[in-house]
Image: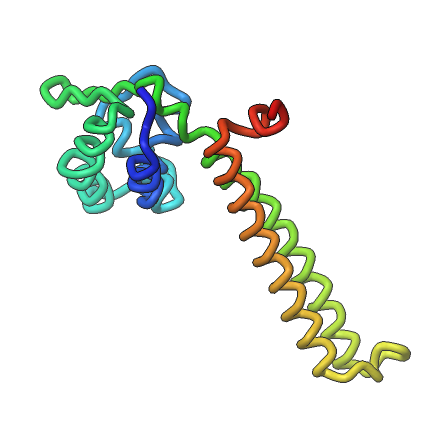
Length: 179
């Protein structure tokens, strides 16, 4: 089944549905209970066995009432309500380029932000003690450099997202190179 652009955007627009896709990419099937625990664990940043009842219930309710039926209507999963089992369909692979690119970009952005933070922390400390050669740099220059660095990171992220979208429309990076 080929998904139209609206189905792809609708599915990706919700973090909980993206988490469902992430969990099901690694499984042949999952019970709604296990899927609930895995998704809630991702959302709350804890292992599934450390979730409280309220956290599980909030995720469970939205999965069974909204997200799983929606994903089943698009043919992304088979949702057997009676058995409480969710099985990924082949069309779920449609989301691989989006989710892989999203994870890769997030890791890259995190590294860049850590580097910028470290560099500006050292520079600020050197300015604070009026270190030779560094002490003469105006605070404005430090602020401007930080702003430009963060702006460059934001521009790179936007270009990466645009590139991923263009590749998905043409069938991926391999298809783009074949043309």
